[in-house]
Image (cartoon, rainbow, N blue to C red; front, side, top):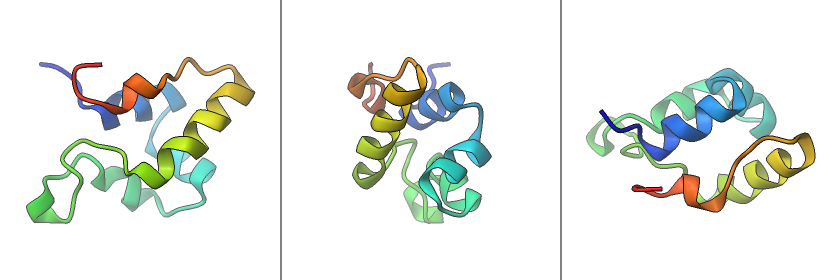
Length: 74
């Protein structure tokens, strides 16, 4: 089974708690990225407002994250 963009991004940072720490948000928000929309989720996508901060953090800390990782079929 193919991973969602959110699963890929979360994995690269070491888990949802670490992503939440970096973004200064509650970890439940990160877990919801993989929930379906009808359950207040994002259907496996990372919200646009979090993409640049994650890319900036990854670049500064040597994490292999690319803009394409945020999109299906990356």
